Length: 298
Ligand SMILES: C[S@@+](CC[C@H](N)C(=O)[O-])C[C@H]1O[C@@H](n2cnc3c(N)ncnc32)[C@H](O)[C@@H]1O
Image 1 (tube, helix red, strand yellow):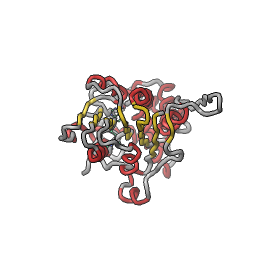
Image 2 (cartoon, protein in one colour):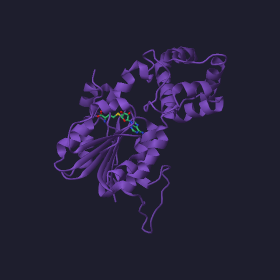
Image 3 (tube, protein in one colour):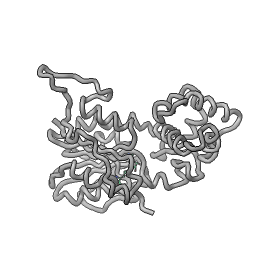
Image 4 (cartoon, helix red, strand yellow):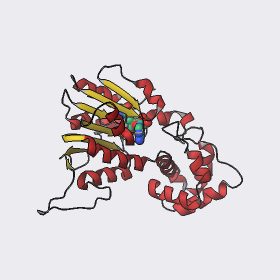
């Protein structure tokens, strides 16, 4: 089975407007599909790639112009400095998890398989789905489900999880899914389970905090006219990226200059979000929620 099929490949590489001798960063290496394509467009240029998952390292590309670093991308600027790189020409972030994560039962990302309640992208971190499900207070759980799963009735759901875990620990994906199913209408069970799993995954991997840190560092690292290319897979991420490119802050608060222009560190190259073509969706249905935004650093 393929590790991961790259999403919006052509559109995102075009968005980077690659200079053959430029310095580029792929913050989410995964199976290396985007990195391989970037390298095809480089001559003497360099590509630095990041992934926090140890398993992605086995996909490393053997090429003198390529360096793969295992780290959370929120710290990418420190690693670039270590490699004597102060500014870069383009940054790509293809957010979220890879197909490999969903297809590996032992990683606990998918409720299609039995496996441990894990969901950590970085296998070295302490916080796992098991900790979230078994030790968070009802208020904390409700907060996670509301914020990251955009679930209605999150408070009731969180209270039920806390009642069900009393006197025992919920250890596996199947145990959690079986406890939750009766709480959902039968025609919406899979959709709601997916929302709960997404919410827990975002909390375990602190995905929104990592995204905010990454965007702030990207702005510091890009040269003038450098490109920031972000593919996101759920509305929370996309909203944050959209706000940031438009206004330079995560809330989307507009600050206008004397002439009424919005001051942002970026020009948005695509005002309308770019989504996969019908052909891409046919070939790769997992691309369905992909949303691409491109900024040019001013
Ligand atoms: C959607 S996949 C990227 C797929 C890749 N573009 C390809 O073509 O194969 C996202 C990858 O980014 C990694 N990742 C997600 N969040 C990360 C973070 N905060 N820091 C570092 N890596 C992260 C995941 O481990 C996963 O391998």
